[in-house]
Image (cartoon, rainbow, N blue to C red; front, side, top):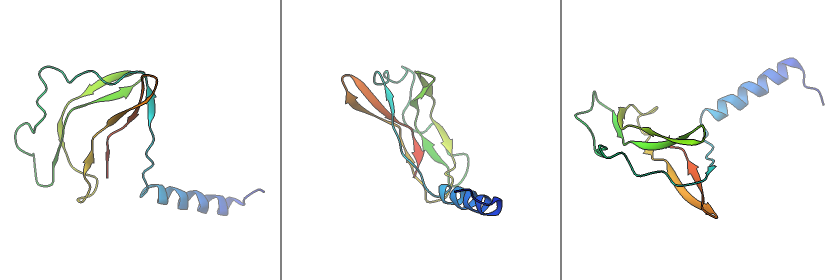
Length: 106
């Protein structure tokens, strides 16, 4: 079935507006768990928040291009005032492989 151009545009706009409010969680299969945090890593907040509403997001390893990359802790403003940061997680999956779930605001 072929959609008319106005109907196709309306459908696309509706789908994109719903996706702005929905979050799809998916895992990426990785071979190993992340290494331990760097030696100089301080897990707690560094200094004071730069302004009201800022949240401390601790450092974590991100999976980028087939490798773990350290992302240092930092102060961030949540996308909406009521959101909280959910740290990345790594779960054993199958025969020494892990699922990596990216950090996100919830």
